Image 1: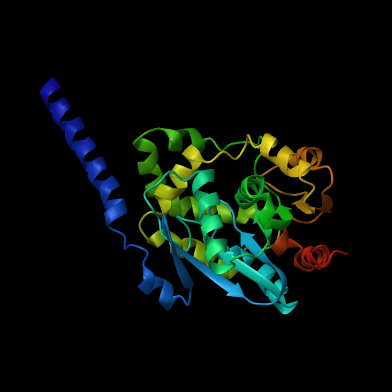
Image 2: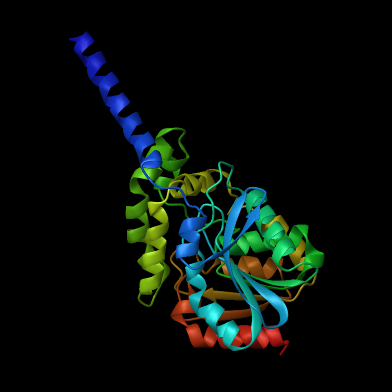
Length: 308
């Protein structure tokens, strides 16, 4: 009986391991051909290739940094609003997301800040930039500004990460060695499909759904998400926020009061750390105010960029 149980468990574990491997190697790699078909520009950086879109215009270039799981498609409204206002604007996909490479690396602040630094050095050499970060992109923007303050003219933070917030129960499972990666690969698509509506008060834009799910079809996305959960500090960045506040860099903070991802209460913590920040609080917006209150948000951003 024990022998049969042993072989049953052994075969079961072997099957799970085989499925785990297949969930990675059974998907195509992200590459230049895929990027070209999607109409994306790309640039080779030290950790991998980054997909981006740039529109030339007046003023310091605005660099849009997206959040944890949805790629730069989330900036459709903002990119168009700034481009239509003749502002120079750059958006890109973080490593592991969208049409950028999925390098075998620790997905932490150092990786994302390095990606951003190399990107702007190559595409916008010698120019000061205006960082506009959403959610985890806000945390990346703060970390970048903390390290390279002389490169940043202004900062826009939209429902930014970096302070304590509730963590989904699945987070503990994902952090578990081995099995966490397996479950990340297994449920990546379901998690995205079910989680997207939580980000919005308004309906999810169809293109956001399409591009968010499409990225999961390429190898490495789920592993990047798991690694980010394990290695990216998104709750203990108060010291970095304070240091940025001390540098007196003009900052605009935007927050939706109906945010279900990062609580609106955290806005007070950001304001305390960056007391000079201008603040826009939105009654009818969730985690993505640039969609929920499109016109109001972009009017305020344009005024902030113009120095009004």
